[in-house]
Each structure stands twice: as C-alpha cells, then as structure tokens.
Image 1 (cartoon, chains in turn yellow, purple, orange, green):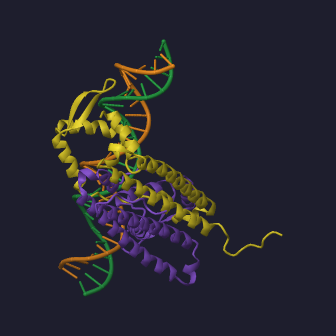
Image 2 (tube, rainbow over the protein chains, first blue to last red; image 1 turned 60 degrees about the horizontal axis):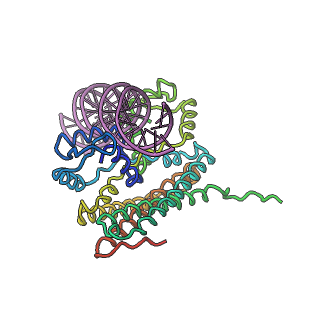
Image 3 (cartoon, helix red, strand yellow; image 1 turned 90 degrees about the vertical axis):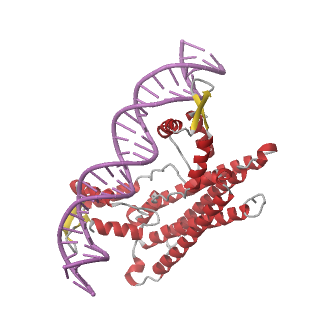
Length: 170
Length: 170
DNA sequence: CCGAGCATGTAACACGTTACATGATTGC
DNA sequence: GCAATCATGTAACGTGTTACATGCTCGG
C-alpha cells in the first residue's frame, strides 16, 4: 500500500481502537524502508509509490505483536467531570451522560452493520484466517458500548428523580 | 494541599480514570498561582507550602468542567494485537486474553472493596454532596471491568476448541 | 544517625497532531 | 478547465513522561 492507502485502511478497519496520522505514517515508512522492513514496490494508481513487507518486516511485525501492550495512564474526561459533579451541577452531569448514551447507541448501530457485513461474507472470505479475529475486535466494541450505555442510563436514572418526591401537581 | 499531597489524592481517588505526574503538577501549580487561581496558604507538615483555590479559581474550575471533554484518538494495544491474531498466533492471543480477564477480575475485586467502604460511610460523610458522584465513577469502572471480563471469556471460549466463534448473546 | 517518606522542581526526551506546502491524476 | 481525490512530506507546536537533583523532617 501507499502511505495514503494505509491511512485509509487503518481508519476503515481499525478505526474503533486505533488511529494514525500522516505525520506518523510517512516518517515511519521511511524508517522502515531504511531498516529493510518494507520495500518500495512500484508506483500506485496515481503518482505515489507503494510498499510491501519484506520477510524481515513480517518477522519484525510478529515480534512486535508478541510484546505485551504497554498500559497507558488512563485519562477519562467524562469520569473526571462526573467525579466533580457537585461542582459541575446536575444539569451538566445529565448532559454528559446523555451524550455518552447517544454515542454508545450510535456505536452499537454501526457495529451491527459491520457484523452483518462480516456474517454475510461468503466464499473465500469466509475462511480467511483473519475473520475470527475481526469478529473478536468487533465484539469488544459491542461489549464496551453496551456497558457504557447501561452505565449512563443507570446514572441518569439515579440523577433524574429527586429522591424525596415533590408534591405532584394536581 | 501541597503538590505532593495533590498527587497522592489524585492517585487514590481518581486512579482508575486519571493520572498526573509531578512534571505536570508543579508547573501547573505555579501557573495557577501566577494567574490568581490558587493561593499559597502556608507551610505544610514538613517544609513545603500548601495551596487552596481562590474564588476565581473555583469559578475557573466550574468553567473547565463545563467544557465538553475532548475525545482522544483511541489506541488499544490489546485489540490491535488481536486484530492481527493470525500473525500473532493462537497462543499469543490466548495469553493476551487471559491477561485481560485477570486484570478485570482484580479490578472488580478492588472496586468491591471501594464500594463496601463507601456504603459503610456514616454520619456527615454519608450526606456529602460528592458521594453520589463517587458512586457513579465507581459504577463506570465496574461496568467496564465486567464487560471486559465477559468479552475475554467469550473470546477464549471461541479460541480454545476448533470451533467457529459464536455470536455473543443478546 | 539513618532510612523512609514528604516535598519541590527542572531538563531531556519522545510522541503525536495539526497545519501547511505542494503537486499529480481523473472524471465531469 | 476545474474540482475532487490521491499523494507526499515537513515544521511547529503542545503535551506528558521520565529521570534526575535536591533537601527537609520524623521515627526508631
């Protein structure tokens, strides 16, 4: 692939859990070529060149995948705001939570479409070695979105009714 | 609080979803003092000085909390590795997933302890305005950890016997 | 007296994004 | 011809981490 195609492929297939910018991709591609891990293989559809993994590159990939993922220090802006909910105010919290719920719902819809697409696959695609793993990453998104939705709804329920019920209008 | 105490408080109370390093805290504290948002209030237990929010600082805090949280581009090392599961190999994937399951379980245990502590609160603590919000952030961790655990178990089940992965329930 | 914890700060470094500059090709 | 898309790369900037340097004080 070319750098451009690579970015498009990453956005399409890994979009839910990974992102790369051009500022990362092009220098990386240059470094990989210098180190003999990818090879410039020809000119693409327009003017750019496309790359492919060398055997050494494929080995380096397997190696990199085998290293344990480094845990990043967490930074959840929603939870931080909610933790200071008494400073933010109930309305602000509600807005935050309805947003989470909405985003979770729309993520779930998108995942359903993707799942339908994968499950409709037929022929050689159906037996591709990567298919089970695509389904697993998809399932991770589904679990995570369902959990976020359930949580947001639970919090909204806890927030909405004033526990001591006000006198109902009559 | 002093910068040191601040870091300890963040690690203790926000540890599941936020982290700050000294390299962040001290320069920030200096900037906040320069801008009149915090005030140096005295010497702490040993030799350092402690700070408190000024009224302007409290207003700025409320303001900052009200701004919508910026969404960070996702970077999930586990899912990235799993996506390339056919390159990584089944054993590597299993190791990844058992790790997720283990970490989720231990997180759930810790959350249970924290929940017990909050629910055992009595007297003035029980009516503190921040209490419901502490419970909400805790609940977020619980939902998320449960979802991660369920997902990991589902994937492990799909991986262990030579069997096509079943769609998750629901 | 000494080690552990409290406390402060800086400097180097890595990372990653954004914006910008530039240009080729293709379809209308 | 022109807009959209494909394509490449760099430079500035911000952010955050890590490691280091430093010193106090309190309990044993």
